[in-house]
Image (cartoon, rainbow, N blue to C red; front, side):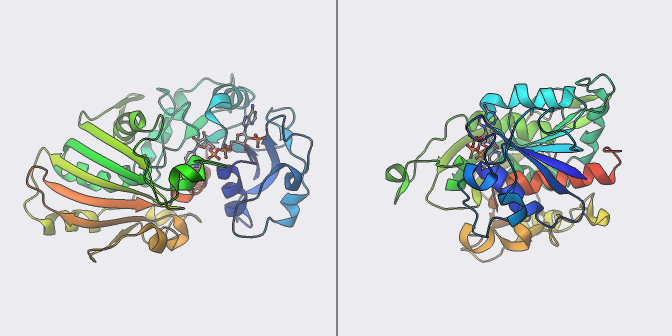
Length: 349
Ligand code: NAP
């Protein structure tokens, strides 16, 4: 399939270009960015920050304006657009009959738009049939969650299904690449922790609740657990970690029961063998000092979830940490897995 990338010059856009290089199903045929970049070759327009060479065939492509007319010939687009422009541009593509697989926050809470993690809520794809962006139904939007909501929802899915979440407390340690390029000023973050990320905390409750919600009659019934979130920026490069504490409706009988619940999770897309699926979805670490972003974020194509420090609390029933690569599992890689699932389920035909 011919794919376009909206926001191709940004941090997430570059990750798409890197990950889609030699993808068995998808070929990049159009690159879109702002007026600052349109008309230039990709090499001139983008400040390449990936640690692999820029693919030759991409370097010489001309960056287009982000319009369906300028990017004609694509079967669908991935979006890594800045949220200040994503509503209008993504909406225009869907209206023109071109499906959009987006990383931006703009449509995540739209009642008809799936907020998709293939291993958690693949049935939410059915929401697409309720959308009316394009008259013929060919243009639709699917989003992937915020880069912290991804590891959190993956870890919580088996626990919520088994014990029923009631209260959640989350403190995140988020890597620098999550702020895009140029991101956080170096003098703010070197040898430091910043205990605030603008706009981040309010996303965690609604996104996690929507993802873990139950689709019934075209509507997502959201579970009613409470979420207290504190989001911090730390001096790591890739891999968002979250320290999580939960109380459940039913208190787990033991830590063995918690471990069994995680280990026996039935991944609903395991037998589809999608190119971007990790070999092992959950890496459960038993060492006291694991997982660590620098050691583990890239494992298994950067698509796995790492869980560790599982232990009982005095007030909370369970404490643990989880971690996943924020620009791969939490952004471009997650979006590619979404597209693979949608293709396998026939949504592009
Ligand atoms: P970024 O590095 O700032 O890139 C933004 C992209 O949007 C650039 O390609 C830019 O093009 C383009 N753009 C800006 N204004 C535009 C306009 N008026 N018309 C068309 N294109 C325009 O940001 P990022 O970190 O890649 O994030 C991109 C999106 O993904 C954001 O919505 C972000 O919230 C989301 N996201 C990021 C992460 C992460 O870990 N970084 C994770 C999940 C989701 P120019 O180069 O031409 O300005």
